[in-house]
Image (cartoon, rainbow, N blue to C red; front, top):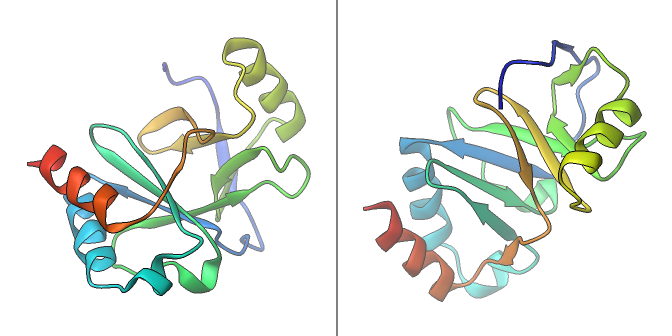
Amino acid sequence: MSAMLDWQERTPGLPPEGLVAVGPLARTLLSELGRRDTAALQGLSLVATRDMLVLLGDGGKLPWLDGVRYCAPDPDVPALWMPTHQQTVLPPDLVHGAMLRRASHARLLLWNAPELALPLDGARPVDAALLAWLEQELD
């Protein structure tokens, strides 16, 4: 995606409902999740790309790791997720409408660094088998 959106600080920030781990932080996140028992993983789901993991779930269950950034749905457009402390300069309903015309996904993460739009519809529940598979894929 080419640089096409301007961003600004969001104050106050949104309470986190997800986190984004890019590059080496993805492995750190997998290690942290791998130390948790099944009950602690309940209610968490993951979306993965080659270089990024997006963990979704209740803010109280999200790990707090140095270097990861947090995301949440926009209060006015809940299907559009963004960084908790950043928002687009353009109104979120206009941005979401434009994104839906390009890719018809119910939930989208719009991220600014690296800039991308990532569908969240396919988030998978976190369990030991998924974590083991992702560990192999990140090697």
